[in-house]
Image: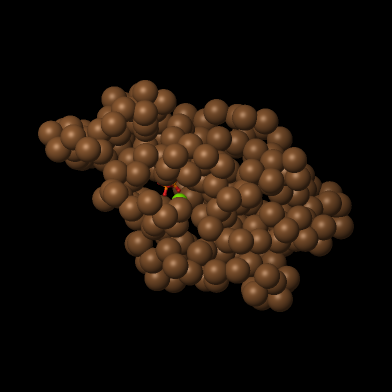
Length: 233
Ligand code: ADP
Ligand code: MG
């Protein structure tokens, strides 16, 4: 029997022996730009190296960077199965041992699906926003916490002050919950910068766009950059 321990967050481990695999749910929370998809793909790649059969599921209305592939903000991509409802692709994913779900907060049935798959002894890894742009729980995704073996919350760089950004701030005027976008519509923000009313102030928007560009440029220039992790449970 061989066993592997990941070099990622504590509590995430697996054995390369499907008979001994009891199934597990791993959750990766954090605001936009915190590296959730990057971390999801890192874990999936590692399971692939360990010869597990892996797949990734993406939300079909998320066509920001690619219609078919899952993509990070810095364009790391992976083939994905698209859907808007996880129950609809259950039979498609039954042959996989490890299932990644990106943007888990958008599916209406993520919590039930994850529990069902873990009961089928699969490893299911979910990347999701824990909170919405108003720092309120995003749908019922927080319901995964008591069901999961491992939960982590990542932080981004606050695009206003360069501190630790734990929240997502919407910088466009739309008010509905599901507004899919990138740096054109959202910024990562710390507690203070999230609360400061910078959306209505034209001058500050310009400064903010400038700061955002600087953050994006400096992040692109950093080799091996990893957002700081903050384990919540
Ligand atoms: P998430 O899935 O959490 O939205 P991704 O994994 O898609 O995040 O993207 C993370 C990448 O985004 C980083 O590696 C970095 O290149 C880029 N990035 C852009 N803005 C920021 C920011 N404010 N903080 C951290 N990373 C950022
Ligand atoms: Mg993502």
